[in-house]
View 1 (cartoon, rainbow over the protein chains, first blue to last red):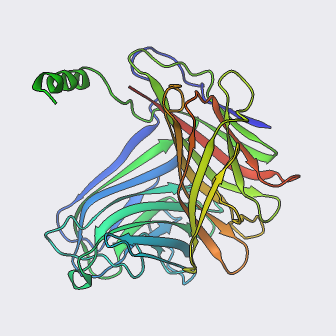
View 2: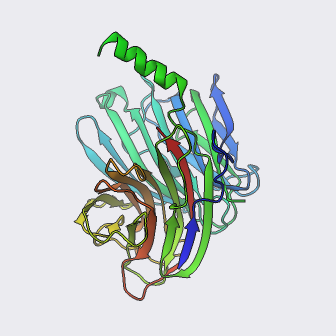
Length: 197
Length: 203
């Protein structure tokens, strides 16, 4: 039996010590960006990427992520480099499920696309990245909300699911982008949860 | 709500931290383990706070057999396992192939986040189970403890990656001292994986 004792850092009597939650990067997009890159430093058990107010230049896009093992010089883009499963539920109560391998890790649903109606806060959500420091796997668990294109009824959509990187190698950077066009606005915050020292 | 009551609440909220951040942690790597415990019984609530909330990151757990579910059982605060009392499990899973999702639901003493019929298989390259558990009201002994899960896993064969979402469990009002992770099958081990535990205090 293996036991994890959760008392290793219990000292002090006011503010708990040894903060595990570190804001590593806050990026505010104020001009169109084709991609957004974030470094994933070593020493963290999990990364959480939070984003809100994200608007895209194109209508009906998907929100995508790729991984790098060379510090962001190149990003994996092979046909089977990623796999995943996503579900979406609309405010009308329609649920749909999709997934499969691809050249990017899909953070949003393949058919419940994201609209770029400027009157809406198009995309809000979070992605937990687990195992980036492990050579054999990296998982992404996502939960986000957005509006569909107006042509689709302007539904409010909730998406959640998971994705995994199929390749090997320690992931040290990620790239965010849209399936078409640019990311025109939004705030992105990368938070690291420290590995046990 | 009266203005006086509102003022009181605002004053109290402003005077005290309602939450600390996620700011303490432990991690464990395990191999060939029949059981992995996350034991927080030694934690003491700091002054001005009432209870702990835990975030448990389960990282790529691999079993040594197919068709295995990961069972999670609460640990009694004074020792021993909670073997009686209600535990409600409601889980939803779906595959990357877009197949009809399944809902798992059970009432037992062992909470299984991968619902009935789900499988996680070591035979798949890179396969394993990863998920994040949020454990709420674990230590106040007053409110029901609830565990929310979000994760994904590989399944052998064409089904590939599955997602597990919205899994939750509810434990009757009691103080939990930790969690036990065990495979669902007899003579099955957790061959490899890591678990990280984060906690914060709440009021």
